[in-house]
Length: 107
Image (tube, rainbow, N blue to C red; front, top):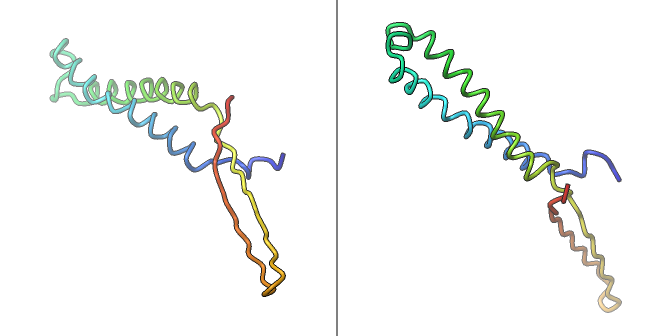
């Protein structure tokens, strides 16, 4: 094992942040929902409370969605590199083929 350099971090981190932001997107609807339920406390005259509800909902919902992503993809996929070298006698030449694929780990 060569360490963390053999893992596909870019796609995994992208997926994690994608899930967190997607989950947090419900925060806007939650803030306006509270204004409908309790308009005397949550309204645009005092946006601080609505923003607090929005921020709290974003963090909690984003965290839950991020944990859902980690349930399906707990670790980044492993990068594998296959190198094939062919040597031909007539005419003498070397052909080198490098194939790189990403395997999903079954954590």
